[in-house]
Amino acid sequence: MPSDASPAQTRRHGAPVWSGDSPTGPALQMPLRTVPVINNRNEIVQAYQVVPFSSSDILNWKNNTPPYSEEPQAMARLLEGIMATHNPTWQDCRQLLNMLFTSEERRAVLNNGVAIAQVGAPQDGDAAEWGAQRFPVEIDPQWDTAEEGHLQRLRGFQRILVEAVKRGPPRPVNIVKIQGVVQEKSESPTAFLERLEAAYRKYSPYNLEDENGRRAIQQSFISQAAPDIRRKIQKQPGFLGKTMNELLALADQVYMARDQVEEEKKDRKKKQEYQALVTMMEQSASGQRGRGGYARGGQGGRRGPPRRLGRDQCAKCKKFGHWKGECPEGREGSQEGPRERGRPERGRNPGRGRGRGNYVPFPAREVIAAAAVMEEEWEDMDGGEE
Image 1: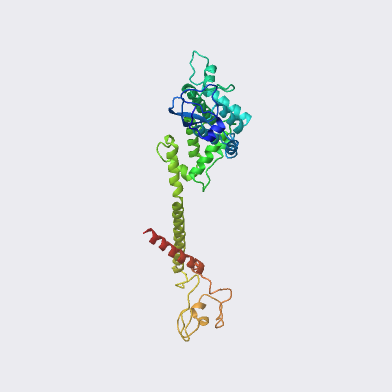
Image 2: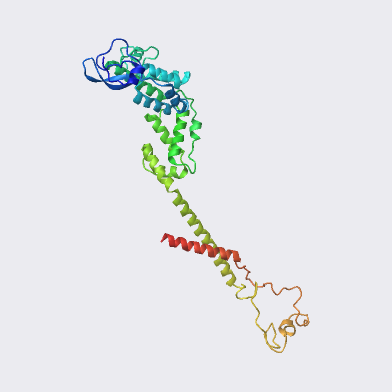
């Protein structure tokens, strides 16, 4: 029988499985690939060429895929890709289960598959038997891929197996672990969502592909997001009804605008500090100009430089002809005699104020310098805003 199969294919797998006339004998149950061949009527047809898995392929998949118990969806994506590219047979699927899964994981996947296969069973029939026809577990069904009906059953088995892997193994429910996944200050919304999804797959009974799982993770994304992102989302009307993509877009807007918000906060703080310094300096200056202040030299407080007296002028009554110690106004009502010229009265400090004014110290040079620097920064900020 002529064939266009390559020498390597012929050497490894013998005669191909025809999609038209079936050769005598059982079909080889290995991964299938279509190749153009010439049948016994000299017609070019598409035949399924069997290509088994190599040990290096299986080891590569096993070493580069996280364990199924930790990331079920990663293993589900691997199986889904293998089904699409290699089109494995029933025996090859069993080989994948034996090599990529532990015994406990394999048992969980098969139980999931049996439950999925029984969905939609006729009410008047045996659901277990009906499901076993769609998803045989222990006995090789010997599907002949040359027959269209058997080929469709194989495709259905592959789909159920992938769906069973997606459901994941039984997981211990730990809501506290999920609630502990909080968005960090510098973490992007996408990275936060990935951590949250990983926690849900590991510690929750939800399937993130169905409606209940999507709703649960959306609520956690809102409540456990950073405070500024959470406030932004909760201000939106009908935020609980938004999709995950819409929530992620809102979170990205806030995350990208954080630098601008921080700069605005710094600018406001600098302006407030500058205003506080200006207010303090104005209050200090007004106190010094008041009664008894430094500038006027009034009755109280720190006095200004004294005016120069004339010759033989009294420092008290400002009259000429006598000095302060001989001033008759100073002796009225007092039994004390004239004091020695040039000596102050004992017990009195002429520098101490006797009026109602209080001395207010002038701002330190450091404060004035800081105010000048802040004034320049404020002017620069105002110029940048314009």
